[in-house]
Image 1 (cartoon, rainbow, N blue to C red):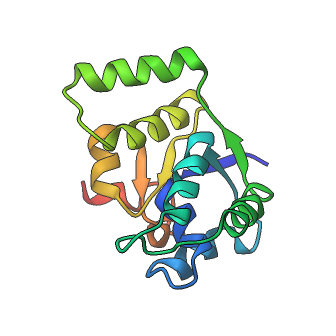
Image 2: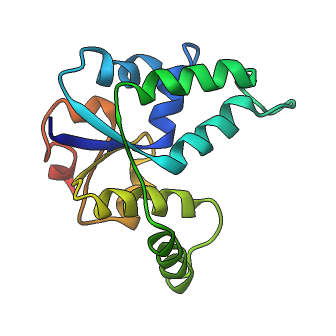
Length: 156
């Protein structure tokens, strides 16, 4: 089955947490298994960190066992993709040379994984950031995804 799109970390997290505001549309993407999605390897680390974070401002606070089991459930129905070590460093270098700051680097790595694997669509809840980093890719929300590859970009 051909990979149709790469899912962002924020979609992965929303998929796994019932209380998340975007849980329904995120989970619906993989529910029937008719579409093949990919997830960048480092997105699993980012999701694990978010799911298990502790403290007042930590919204989910899953145990390590719960988080790992949840991530494994998604891993079983998606394709794992990633960057090589040199590709990762080049993505970081390019981000720095373009003046990139902070955590948007993770969006850059996700987009670079899509490019490296010939995946032309990224599904995210943070469309603005991803589109600004990758204007040549189709970037859409889970709700927009079902409308076709150009539905989200038609209004640009």
